[in-house]
Image 1 (cartoon, rainbow, N blue to C red):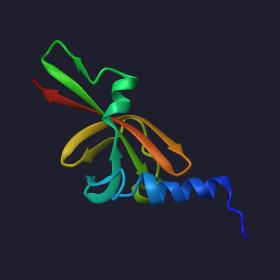
Image 2 (cartoon, rainbow, N blue to C red; image 1 turned 45 degrees about the horizontal axis):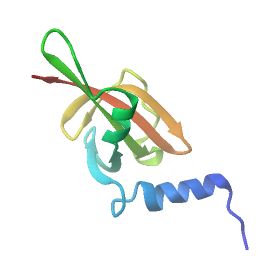
Image 3 (cartoon, helix red, strand yellow; image 1 turned 120 degrees about the vertical axis):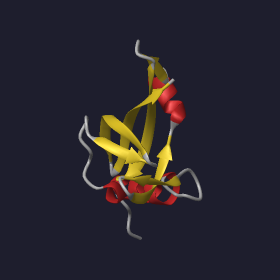
Length: 111
């Protein structure tokens, strides 16, 4: 019997459970490419208020997404803009957690 390393077990769980479209994730379009992503609005609420008001009547909406590194590509830099499902967002945080990216996005919305 071959024992798997902890990292191998985590990568299996990412593929088979966490970023599985039959379980937690859905297909979304990122910069013109479809890929399985999990959008976690509840975690954003825990991290910050969902919407911040500016004086000019523009509201900022945040989204937290989880995506496999091998699907997304290189870890995106903070400050980079991406398109998610046809809407433009600014990356305000991104981390690589054993092959799973956690990316916090921010986008402006008019009142």
